[in-house]
Length: 415
Length: 123
Ligand code: SF4
Image 1: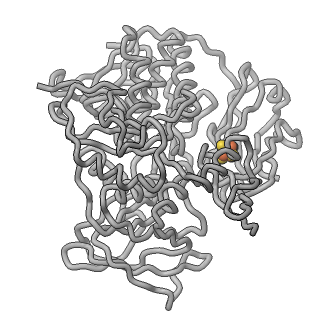
Image 2: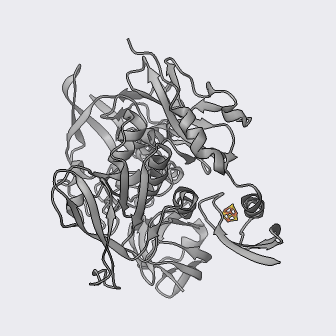
Image 3: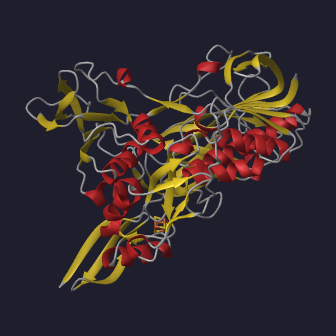
């Protein structure tokens, strides 16, 4: 069976990609997800604050997911396969997947959009010493436990890492009657959004220890406490600064990484910092016809931008499937001077007739700077930045006219 | 007596750092807000802080045990924990539609708790 576009993953990215592919003329779209319903991780994000940009109002995760689904559910061009696990994807764009009713199926797409999201960094990735005790869970697992199944992971909680999910869970666990004793963050700044620090920690007087880490987890079968120490600039624990916190649970909120198991074997290049495949402004990877969207490209802090980017991927995958694309010259975008990551990592020129949007992250907290996009000595775009935090993605809209004089490699940096 | 309070605006993800000046405990002025919403928030926050509440209630007949719910408006910040405890007393049966009122006028605060999404019945 051949499809114009096969979308892998029906979270916010996959649903928006499928919607946009349909709106841009694709006639046969297959949307696959391993879950029993669409929505992906949004279904466990029951807090609100989603949708300000896409829908102009604050929605909860489940509401956002439902809105996204309503956009695609009656589209006859879109076939939805739920409860379906994708086993392999090949460079020839064959997708093998399995489902209890259909069994193992092989389908082929003219184009493929990878929208497989991201996963949490586990304990192993951060090497905390201590025993293999019960009571150590990742923030996302705790979230699923509490919000979808009605269990709390423990009663006295210490959260390691100040990523957004950890902060959200600090509040959620407090509301469910747990005692959240502390959030411990190794960086000198929080890795979560400011509003989450205010609303999830400050509101409940939960202490946030910046430049601190857990150096030991105690207990016999179950966590009984942790030892916390201050760290120096090199993030090494400072002897003599240790103190103990009694707790029965350690929640890890130490970062997310693109889920790329399915694409690791494809001839793609990956960005060492975002962890996702390199893409151009249309979210096409280096393998023609392979697109990627959402958290598999780079981890987002706001779902609205996932939807926005996935719309781009869906559109250009649809156009490609209809042979409605023009080629171009590939120009690399390089990050420098305080800009840590940029998606897309390259542009196709000179036939860029449309405006280009860059999604950036800075490497540390900055104030009163200019984001400058250059090609050689040519300044293409200069934008004032009042404040930039590593935890918050920054968008740069570059009008098509500004990209006409591009000669060689593009750089983006702070000045 | 004049005093200043520093906190972040949480109205949008930009999270501007606000500095509020209070005169005898009363709101006077604010700086650091990028847009007018920040000024509104600053005044509210030092006068009567309000918060949205999200949570879950027990759900039967849907295959999944919990229904996510959200308040229709903000509640006084100091009532949030009490309101969350109310949610634990409730069980609803599928089918449920987005927007269905799950708790009317929670704690008499004039705010309803509504369903965040649809849940169909599963036999
Ligand atoms: S002042 Fe305006 S821009 Fe700044 S955080 Fe508040 S709402 Fe956002």
